[in-house]
View 1 (cartoon, rainbow, N blue to C red):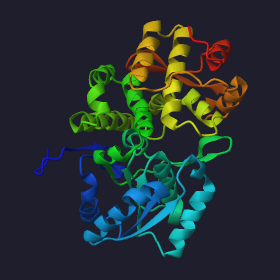
View 2 (cartoon, rainbow, N blue to C red):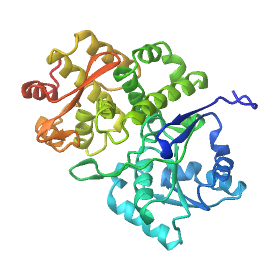
View 3 (tube, helix red, strand yellow):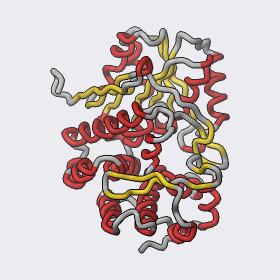
Length: 368
């Protein structure tokens, strides 16, 4: 707790000269200006935000920067996954150039995962690299996409097929903004939270079971440590494998089939819901492959349902279409699809040793 009674915690992502702090707490947004002024990262900032988040928080953050003596401009783009493509990045870069932004300037990603991915990618290539900070406003972005430096945009063939590894200089997570989220967006973020427990930390998985009521009530006493634990776990993985050469791939639990389902929906299904479906599907593959006891799949299914998350591929989805998206997923190497499968709660295995018949059965929604 700080002096004003607000909950606040800071952890460090240790990457040598690319290390950076993650500050988590209530009321953090109001202190970003002073923190950036003290850090001296840039002489002015462009706040990049989608039109929906900008209408809620954009001017407020501009005022906060101004009060700290920092120049700032707000640049927006249409909200939604449909904006996550190269044309948006080109438009944003042109607007930066038109306004005279140079290598001494920086960007602030204000929004959810789409905004963070776009802004990070833009920062990595504009003027061959300028500093940026993450101010995630969705639970999914706070616990996952804002940390670790993966940036990118989509192609018609699949998600995040163009991108870079480019670390932010800082991450500011204000849990109060979660109260502005539609419930669906908050629940979608919980899928990524559950991912950490299911794939890395069995005790955290159990804690999520026990704290469900407090978490759904957005109690800061539960929300702040929950987000902190997710960030700690991700930081530990990223510190060991920044560029996803091995260990970091465990963070893709639920994302292989999840991304295929999301793409097949025309990105109408939100990412977190798709990941929840993907985790349950991965658990089923683990059982069918003899890697996990059926109780593992049942436990994952039960916790997902407790947080009102979907666990089945929606009716009407064509298995052949899902197969097509799987074949072009970034986790497919040499024509082999690599899955992250749970062996038990808190431990997963990366493998391409999955029978084609089992993949097809799961894509048809056939669970044991």
